[in-house]
Length: 242
Image 1 (tube, helix red, strand yellow):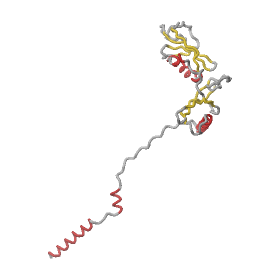
Image 2 (image 1 turned 180 degrees about the vertical axis):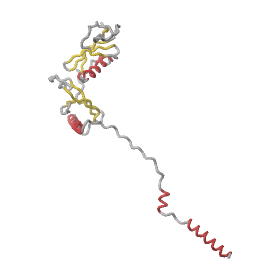
Image 3 (image 1 turned 180 degrees about the horizontal axis):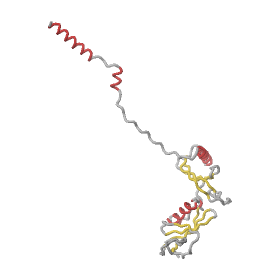
């Protein structure tokens, strides 16, 4: 009896040893070898692409880009769009008059568009509203402010005020005259009816700007923080630099 129990026990032990020594199945191997799950990686956001009001507008801009490239002697795909804004040109020259040319003096809605090539050169393009007619506009000597005025903050403020309030293109503006004066009040000598003005001497400038055939008088303070388009000045003050 004891011999039988001993043989039976040894049989069970041998069976357990054989079972432990069996190789794992393919499914078990794949389970143990599979990598741990990793956190998903967020994709990199692409650069913003200029948006247009319609597919037709986008097509017109693409055609304009090709035409500008051809006129500049570049491959059709050499230019990229930098900016595009709607403006109102003072005449049919599209803000870029050419010497010895005559233009109809009518306000002309259009676009000011900037393209750039691979080397970073920018092409300033002025167009009509439909973008069918355009000119690559290079800054002219006449349209640039004279060097004595270029760093004057009052002149810059006057030009900015004229662009914002009258809607003229900055490239069409020329500086005709800048005179240092002393305004008799805080309204810069251009008070309106029922407007309260402090009666204090205010140093400033009387600046004359021209766009097309229109001439504008602007009154500013000396720092350029205030600029007024003055159509009916109350009086003409004496020069303060004489």
